[in-house]
Length: 265
Length: 314
Image 1 (cartoon, chains in turn cyan, orange):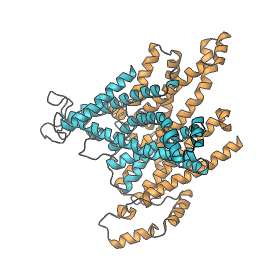
Image 2 (image 1 turned 90 degrees about the horizontal axis):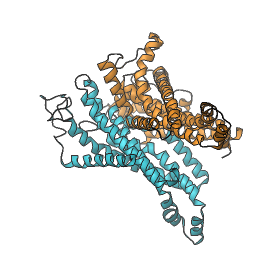
Image 3 (image 1 turned 45 degrees about the vertical axis):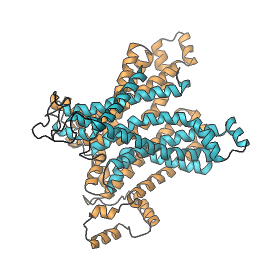
Image 4 (image 1 turned 60 degrees about the vertical axis):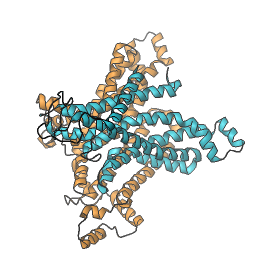
């Protein structure tokens, strides 16, 4: 039941993103001085912002930003974390010890801290926030990959393949990695909503997506100056974040139960 | 326990060394010239050269790193370009906002999460359980800064009970200060409360299935006593770990809430430093916060080993 709701919400999220690429109810960037900070109406179902831009169109366009940052950040986290974990878990010894201390250190840098650090040197923007969020995902992916490699490396089917003459690359690629994939997929799914919230938070702080590009976090930042004039402006982008995260969390929980049948009692 | 402690301490030192390398690399080694960042792109070349020399950027990188680290270990994190004050002193001056905010959020989260988690677990698969599960899902989904905006909208814009932000310091009285931090702490603790509630529920459910709980029940121990005396104490061990690990996340999250509620804490210090191109401050704050998180995680590891002796012999 919860899984079905998750699939439905996630489907709606992706559909809104795809639709916004070809059609939005209004141009998300076109301003109108006359129609500023209006509440919901027939012409503007979510109202308008301080420049008279249509909030529904901007929320729809913001979907694309959120999904893009989510996908790329998870790719960065898995792309860096999994090889680190594989190296540590497969090779073991001092390399494993050193890599795990590095991973512990990276754990000290939540996305917001890396974004602060990078923004000090580079111009804040969507690239920086994506990389910062991705870095924050590295420890979880590295630990998971390491854990499965440690557990699998001594299993009979791996030892048998090694005895038959399989080299390291073949052992890792053909025998161990495919068997450690399930928890990594679950991790990717559960990281995705975290990335969406982090993107919005960084954009809110001015460390991520920059205006006029539509981002839910940026819209919330702008709405804060007009809370008493148009409270709806602060409601819809936030609700979009909460709904997406809810859907993706439910989807992730369901996937975990599907891929880890032992955990379901 | 001593062997375990020594091994963990060595690991902590190695981890902190990596933290310092990461901060150093981000500021000094990544493409992008810190001097140009601070002086601005149109700066006089002579000024640039002097700044470079003053910061020691004309020397080899390993030398720079060792000098910087030696200073940091003595608490010398450089001087703020913006305020002309030592960075260490600036950080300390902002702690009376960030630390109480984090502590209040953690306390509120625990106060809400533990009773709700116990309630849900003791009524597993009943309507009350499902209701708390739904509440927890909402708590996980609502981002803290949006929760903050909604709280401002309700309690300051509509009801006028609280100010929409700002902090006058502890000298104005504890009551006023706590009042100023209350809404941000609620917004910050919401997510943690949901996480802790789920952790409490699942941990207690697991323990309630154990044999010694069945034994206690069979002996005729009243249900309330079974839960309070036998089940809860063991169930809380993993919850303590989760709560401890969340502390670091709360500390980082306070940066966002400080921005929402215009509180003069560490986060606002760092954000202001970025606008002012005040690199020593950004560097100092990130090093400080990252080290705090690593040390908190270390302390949680130790407390876990202390609470559960099985961990030490891994």
